Image (cartoon, rainbow, N blue to C red; front, side, top):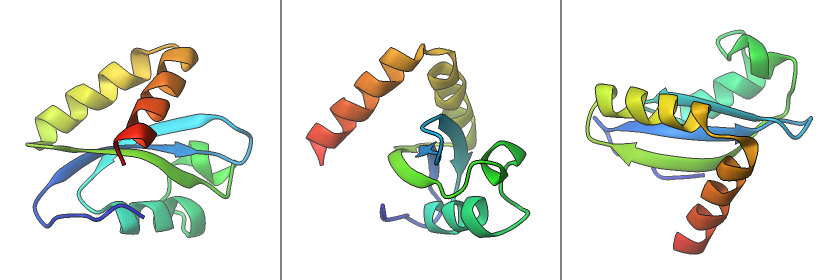
Length: 92
């Protein structure tokens, strides 16, 4: 699980049990992934596709930056999202 710095915003991507990808933003990655997997506070999309796992996260300077990055990722075709995941894995 990625380390979450207090006060920071993150854009994240989850891989669902059906292989689909879900993108969102949060201030607390660990809490949010837990919500997606175990509570009604998770997104409707992920509740039907549990369990989910965190496959990408990127720290952003502000909520606005995180929301813009989320929107940009959501517009990408699946192949480009997969490439982003591959690039992220190489950086770790």
